[in-house]
Length: 330
Image: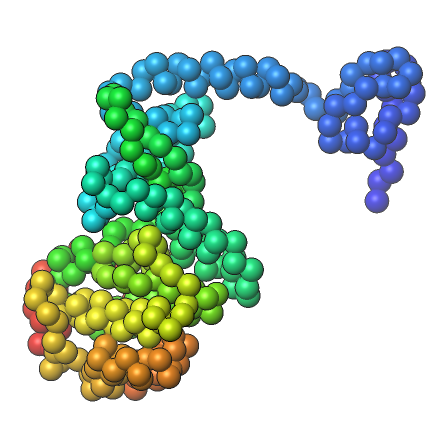
């Protein structure tokens, strides 16, 4: 270790150890001393930030939405839910940030987005083993408030941090694969869903409306993000994990079948997976007994029996020409 002596360059007096990382005032000659070659004072930084922000806001144009003292430019519409319009937006100013912006419809129940914000805040504050990992598989709240655009009409808004790398929902994947996806991809997607549901259920929550449109897929990392938590509830006699587990299984059935009709279990699906999928999607008592962890164990065993040792298979959410054939014919 090399000893360091901190002295004032003006009078030679000793300086406190804080001089190693911040500006200090010499107690003898009152000189301001810093080790950095160049320093920006907080007041000057704030003035520059406010100037750059004002310049950006002046040029925002007519597609900007104001919320919580910030303005956001709409970049891309993502869809319409039952109660809100969802868009990708970017915060304007010196420190831009991309967000998912949900704007409540005119006739939607008041306070619905506030409830979703409260639920997401509680889920992100859960202190359990694995919280650092699973918090990345749940929406991250960026803000909630009242939003307004050019008109004087204000609407409730929910701001979520834009999830990096997530391509879109399983509903979109299903539309892109009308003949169904390869069952090996269905296995890892189902497992990722079960992992998140197990964490949420153990924390005392159930999703309640788990459809393909609420499951975002990350093709590169083979991850799944569960969204749409406005109807989530605390676990009780009516809100049970088994319902979530059945809904997840039905989402996988739809992914394997493709199309928009009620998905059967295809004849080409390997028998171990077909048996498990039928139980998980149709037997609520079986789901209640096994829970997310039990179904995941059964899925691992069925996948190994059907496909052998697990291995990473690249996934693309858009089909190749060969994907137009039913998986049972390949």
